[in-house]
Length: 266
Ligand SMILES: Nc1ncnc2c1ncn2[C@@H]1O[C@H](COP(=O)(O)OP(=O)(O)OP(=O)(O)O)[C@@H](O)[C@H]1O
Ligand SMILES: [Mg+2]
Image 1 (tube, rainbow, N blue to C red):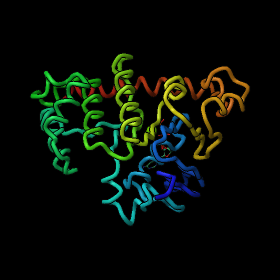
Image 2: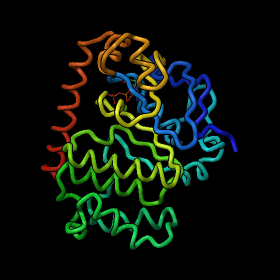
Image 3: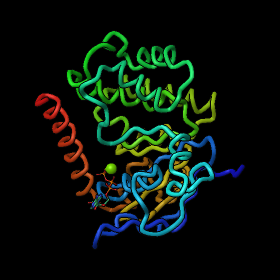
């Protein structure tokens, strides 16, 4: 078994004239917690989509758990859990039903007690019989996280999992992920716009800007390379765009607003 859980070499994705991901190479070790950071539009979600079989690369190689996501899609899918940037729950079903379907899909053994534990963990057990369309944005997010953790994957991909979550829920989520990482050796690959969250939780990070990796290493190494006190400062020095940082937070706000709006409209 190879030491690497994810191995990416010269990965490129073009959308027409736009090169969203530009000859990116990196690897993530088994059991590592790895953060993929970058400004809006840097190529984070596009990379996650290629790793998780949802998008076909223009060129380059990917191995996830030793497998090619495109030639061995089903086997790769079985090895990961995923929490998307955009909600992917079935609104018409209850929280419990969303969990059960996922359990059946992934052939989870003893799903019932696991579902109960996870729904309690994200504080939705009392609301398990409520249709998801009646949930708030934060509740949907928590249910997505619970669902992503249900089949105890070897690797979990989280694309901005904590966007719009309150600090307490965010801490709970990280406590659970650290527990899974420690007890089951689960590899965690996540993106976030919160530098402090990456600094605190990731063993290694990569910073991507305009489709290219501009820094990689432990948070301490990346800070040191820029002579920066905080990861936020290092990030700004590397990507050099305080304007885009403002962009990022307004886009964040917009997304959260859109979600609230969509929830209300339904
Ligand atoms: N389906 C698509 N068709 C065309 N262009 C796309 C598509 N998906 C992404 N892009 C473009 O690729 C680039 C990278 O987008 P991506 O969603 O990967 O960014 P990101 O790093 O996840 O940003 P954010 O922090 O805003 O989520 C952007 O320029 C985006 O407009
Ligand atoms: Mg994204």
